[in-house]
Length: 291
Image (cartoon, rainbow, N blue to C red; front, side, top):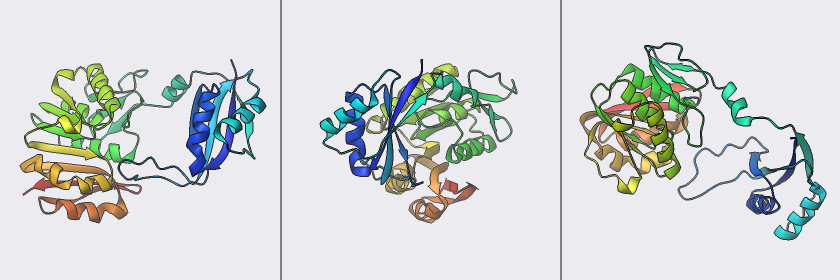
């Protein structure tokens, strides 16, 4: 069945109102797109920033009278819509279409991420079976890729570790498959913990991974901590994360733009011999050993 997309360009201030109004008028889904190539890389804690010029897109049944929908949205939101357009969208299995473009990826020498619709290219390798999902982290972003490469180059055999900001659980799972004894996966998003649990089950390592919200995590220091989040929270969390690493232990930090690296390095130098381990595109990965 074909669908209709209602596309309304708007401002940062009005985007949420229009999105809510579209859902009230029966949209099957609503998405937002940046209209001016304006990345939002590091929101402040507790905020949900929006682009200054945003395209709000609602998906409606093909039989919908979008002219009536627009008028109803105007009445409901008290926003005058001066510009909108309709686009026809053929029905397809969008999840499968995305999956078809998600191929096995290699990180270092022996670590692979393999989607469920593919065979593992190297059966004897450390193969993470992982599909795209709601939580961030499938290895496609440089920040995740560099952490995986670090793990491949430094297999944490028999070590206990912390994956802080675990997302999909990809780093914790990779560490276990590379020989780690146990991983504590911590994330403030309950959906991430669900994804980590499910992915650990899929990779048959569930008994070696524990999941926690930050407020529930009271752990002793570990030989290894991985934190793939963002520069600002990494700086703010430096005392806490530093305390979670044993003397002589390793810390790996990612989610950092190259221009932000020095600020993060300064925050961790009191406790670690730390430096830029690798850079990919505009992103860097830091690695250090605790004094």
